[in-house]
Length: 219
Image (tube, rainbow, N blue to C red):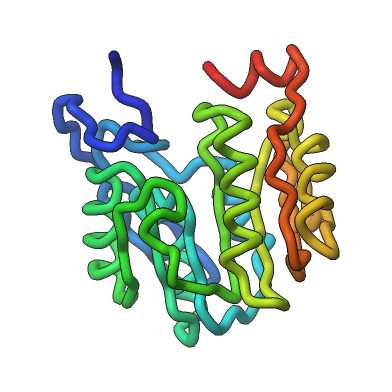
């Protein structure tokens, strides 16, 4: 079976790459490899999400499904008062994220974690994610519910998702988990959703998935 970016231990041959990006006045260099998401450049969804984030983020921040750290490292470099945690199931991606954080002058806790399994005792003021859509809707919606449980009472989940990959239905589901869900931006077919103040109890029932959404979610 070929590797996916959510494979725990990628077996693909190494193909190191690197690229440079500019974010809010900072120049950032990222080292990448095969077996991770968007190896050759920062993907458009992450770009849209980064440019929608608040100007000043403080407190505990989690980059869930961090890959090689493009999202978390960028936001932490521009927001030095935040305390960054990055987590991913992909061991190769986690090693790259830790190296990229250090290379870009960012302090972060970087963990191998299948969803929130390694984060059970932690709470966050912010969770940011470009979720692994190809892992399937059931897994993604469980990640949303677990995010609601891992936030502080006034915390926010901010995520990016393409409209054709189920953004409208994801927004409807998130409204069962959070007091406020707003579409903070949309660009290039992507929606950025900001979800604030999780409800006391989360709705973790299995979501309905229509056939058109299935075709886009698992490829």
